[in-house]
Image (cartoon, helix red, strand yellow):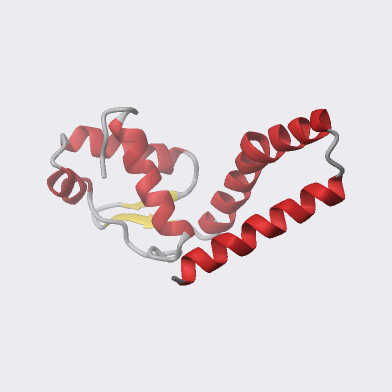
Length: 126
């Protein structure tokens, strides 16, 4: 799961975020320790701690002294809102700019998106 293309601590933070967004880690659930992350991914514990601390600094996780790290209340909603905005900026805005250049109306674009969503749905079922 860990690759060399991006900093490892960023990838650790993203793994935890993904688990929160998809419901694997519920709010108030305990997060694996930095030593567990380090052993599982065969990385330095300091690197794992840096990834976890990024999430502590952003209010996604919080520390219970002597117990460990836990998912903060509201963390999932916060992550979904942030990722939705990133999705808009990274994908939707450029898509609409290109569609406008090509003379594709918002209605036509909506139809194309619906068609693509339907195809993706069929592929997921198979």
